[in-house]
Amino acid sequence: MVPQPLRAMFSQLTLATTMLATMVSFTRADEKNVYPLWPEKSVPGETGTIGEEHVLPDREGQKKVMRVTNVTVPTLTVYQPVAEKRSKTAVVICPGGGYSILAWDLEGTEVAEWLNSIGVTAVVLKYRVPAREKSNLAPLQDVQRAIRIVRSQAADLDIDANHIGVLGFSAGGNLAARACLHDEQKSYDKLDAIDDLSCKPNFGVLVYPAYLHDEKGGLKPEYAPTETTPPIFFAHAFNDPVKPESSIALFQALRAKGVSGELHIYSQGGHGFGLRKSDDPVSTWPARCAEWMTREKLIAH
Image 1 (tube, helix red, strand yellow):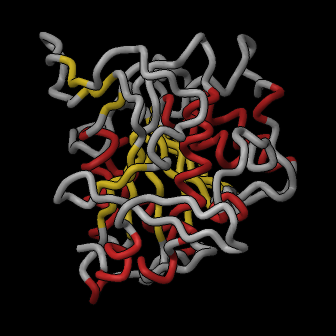
Image 2 (cartoon, rainbow, N blue to C red):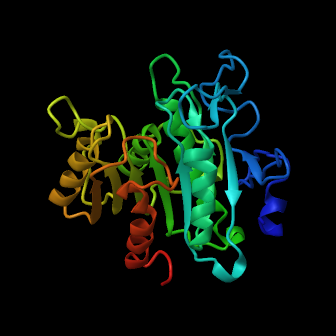
């Protein structure tokens, strides 16, 4: 359950541009703690011309996954652990889907439930897909806004504003990496006081992240880290068609900058495994990630 003070904050989104400190609040989209990411009619660059949001039918012969597409109204879905297990840490989750769809349950809601089980507040980001005009600026705008909103609500969410991470899978892993690496990029014009807050996550978890390496296996220049890049945990499978070089290249670049990281390459697992149990060794990655978060003092033993 989301605490009552936060619910009060999430009542009719308004902008008070004449005030020194703008108060921003949200209207609940339904009874599942879903909130709009942007003020009404203020989604940057959004024209709403791609058709209605919908869930694609299951693909024959493939695992059942809730594939959401045509997202023009980004949202945050908040999951909180029970009070007695709650840590001061929150994670913004970026589902994957090739910047075309969002694997909403496999890489979103199921992940939120796992994070709650280890005491972490989870916020599933429904970012805009598919990519507009071959540009992925909209998802970056969405994840930066999401991190700022979570930081602005730290007191009501009962979290530490300096313990906010980002976790992503595949294209969502690419987006999570961009959040970690591109926090200085001004992706949209300021709307309110929330946008005065930092959009830089305090840590990242990248699971089979995509598009980070070039044809030779090296890191693409636009993903170069700095000495201030936050620590990152990686999980990838050796036999993933989205090659593990994507994780390896960024991990090596982090190491060269003296930034803490942890890299797990598993022999089997393929792509799109999420957290679902299997006989493949890659299904142990959540336990390794929880251990890493404990060592980073993000969750308790």
